[in-house]
Structure formats: C-alpha cells, structure tokens
Amino acid sequence: MDKNDAILVTGGTGMVGTRLVEQLQSAGYTNLLVPTRKELDLCDEQSVNAWFDRNRPRYAFLIAAKVGGIAANIADPSGFLADNLKIIVNQITACHRSGVEKLLLLGSTCIYPRECPQPMKESHLLSGPLEPTNEGYALAKIAGLRLAQSYHQQHGMKCVLPMPCNIYGTNDHFDLSRCHVLSALVKRFSDAVANDTEEVVLWGSGIARREFIHVDDVVDGMLFLFEKAADGEIVNLGSGTDVSIAELASMIAEETGFQGKIGWDTSRPDGMLKKCTDVSRLHELGFQASVSLRDGIRQTVAQYRTLSGACEKSLDDVTIQKSTRRVA
Ligand SMILES: NC(=O)c1ccc[n+]([C@@H]2O[C@H](COP(=O)([O-])OP(=O)(O)OC[C@H]3O[C@@H](n4cnc5c(N)ncnc54)[C@H](OP(=O)(O)O)[C@@H]3O)[C@@H](O)[C@H]2O)c1
Image (cartoon, rainbow, N blue to C red; front, side, top):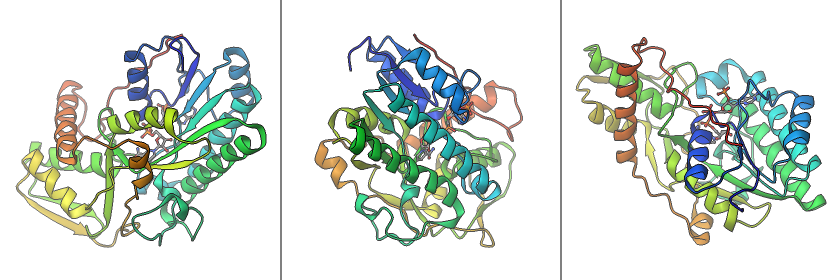
C-alpha cells in the first residue's frame, strides 16, 4: 500500500477499527476513509454501492459487524444472522463492483465446529455442526469468507482472511448487555471492589477454556497478514494459549483487588468447553502475539477505572468513549 492510497476501514468506531485507524495514521497513511454507521449503514445495499461509487477505495479493511457476547447472541439470533449477512455481502460485492484491489475481511474463530479437535486448525472449517449459542454470527462469517474466496477464484479479487480469537483491550465495551467475557469480568470485579460487594456470581461453571488476544496484537497481525498471507487463505490470529474462565476470573479478581467469594451460576451455559486456535500457520508466516494476558488485563482494569471515574456515569452502563475519525 502507498501512503496516499485510498484505504477504507469499516467499523472504525469499534474496538478493533479504532485501533487500526490509529495504527494506519501513525504509519503515515493519509487517505483513510472511515465512514461511521450514521454516514453509511452497511445493511443498506443501495447506500453501500453509492458510497463505493463516490469514494472508490483501492484497499478495504472490512471490520464492521454486529458483535456481542453470549447473552446478546442468545437474545437476538435472527439479528446476528441477518445483519451480519447483509453487512458482509453488501461490503464484499461492493468491493468487487467498484474494483477494490485487495480486501481484508475480519472473521472469528466462532466459525469452527462446536466439537472441533483442539487446537483448532484452519482446515477444520465446515467439518461439523456449529456452537448453537452463536450460530447466526458464525454462519454469516463463514458465508463472508466463502464469498471473498469465490470472488478471488472467479474474478481475481485479492483477499486476506484472518480469524481472531476473543479480542480485548483498549476501547473495549463494558456495557453488560453486549460486552464479551473479559471486559464483563473486569467490570464485575471492579464494581464489586468499588461497592464493597462480598460475592461475585458468574455465568457457567468456570471450566470452559478460552483464548484471548489483545487488540494491539490483532491490529499488528492484520497489517502483517495483509502483506504476507496468500490470497484467499484463512489464517488463525490468536495467542495460541488458553485459560479456564475460573483462572481468568482469579487473575482479574487479583488485578482489581477483589478479595471476596467467586460463585458460579451453573444454570447458565458454558458455551464450547474449549476454544484455542492452532497458530502454527501464523508463526510460520512470521507473526506472534506479544501482549501477555496479565499485562493486558492490568491495562484493561486501569482503563475501566479511569473511564468509570472520569465519565461520572453509572458504573452499570459504561462504554468506552469512541473517537470517530474520517481522514480523507
Ligand atoms: N471482539 C471480539 O472478541 C472479536 C473476536 C473475533 C472477531 N471479532 C471481529 O472483529 C471485528 C470488530 O469487532 P469489535 O470487537 O471491534 O466490535 P465493535 O467494537 O462492536 O465494533 C463494531 C463496529 O461495526 C460497526 N457496525 C455495526 N453494524 C453496522 C452497520 N449496520 N453499519 C455500519 N457500521 C456498523 C459499529 O458501529 P457503531 O459504533 O455505530 O455500533 C462498530 O464501529 C468484527 O468483525 C468482529 O466480528 C471480534
């Protein structure tokens, strides 16, 4: 990519998109196109096509998605499937129509089957039934990566397809109705310390194992893969190590200073019992995640505390402030 190429970033107000735009700006890219949802609703095909006709990006980082934790996915399965399908299909077909040279579509390790052998390899895609709690989201992501691969095979459109595990870190969400497990635990334990609560009860049994990657590593990995991955190749983007939710909760309790009891509500689902990616292809290409989980948790706790204090909002409803950039 040349420094003055027109580069589209969708989802630029979200956790990953914000960080990606910052990284591209600091690397000297001067023609970034970062439409907000208000400027461009990606579910609206006509608006998407008109926007691409007007702006003609050369490269596209397709980051936008309807994203949420297990509770949000269970509450709105049709929304997660329908909105994500529309967003993905509209973006990719518009890239093809308007002659985008190369795109990156950010996937997710939710695409792998519920009973996937561990660690999950890229070749395990479509080898078994999906985890039902986020099936709609996963189906839309799978459709998206197959669509991008089809445009590549049929029309030569270049595409890069990283599959990140659970992402956390700077600009994460702390609104319990939509946030992911790590930021939810940071909020729950930080609030418990602030309110002198003696017990924090968490969903599930704590035995499920999950893999986490800091958003800084995700963005560095995406930019790395944009240059190095083969076109149409799916590449896992993870840390390659997992922790149980109980271990994660203990680490976060320690970092927040919570000394009370941790309880488990086993009537709530655990989701998949283990989810960890095989990152050998990523390592072979030459990239490794570098932010340790302990350091990342410490930073996320500090950020939540700063934000919840600085915003003077209810601790029950804090979302990290987003800065919307449009650098054209
Ligand atoms: N977070 C994770 O753990 C995780 C793990 C694996 C993969 N991913 C993938 O990483 C990407 C970014 O996730 P994130 O955590 O950064 O999510 P996020 O913070 O929720 O950001 C999502 C972005 O998409 C935008 N968006 C959603 N619907 C839109 C629409 N109809 N039109 C235009 N923009 C729309 C949002 O705009 P608003 O600000 O207006 O809502 C926001 O900018 C997603 O593709 C997600 O599937 C995330």
